[in-house]
Length: 196
Image (cartoon, rainbow, N blue to C red):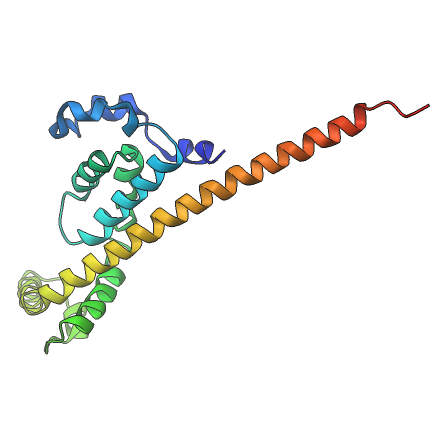
């Protein structure tokens, strides 16, 4: 069953509640539907986690956003919170570049920032301040297309992952059911006595 696959990657319910990280969500986190592993709860968790991870890539608090969405749509809470780590310090720079390019298709603007000059600097306090100011100025110029690109990627990844998980779960259950049927047929053939 796919349940076994997802059970390996989820956090323990009692440890997560006891940690206090989700105390802002109140008593709603005690709803047992938020902790079950079935086709619908896992697919909804992927929808919530992927949307929060990609759409809120440049904001802190992605796990809280994923948790709120998972509670609202009754998705698996640990999977939704864990999925936001798809966007991390290693994956975010190329994803932000892609989001900016997508956003610039819809909101074309002129930006005059030399990205190579921004990335090549010496690690001194004066150059770090200059680089931070250059980054801030660049962000002020391109924040609208960047946010739009992040939202579009978040929506696309959320719904794509939702339908992929639904299809994967059905395929996996159908495959297991067919294997059990073949096994039963083989057992019946082996136990039938030969005709005299």
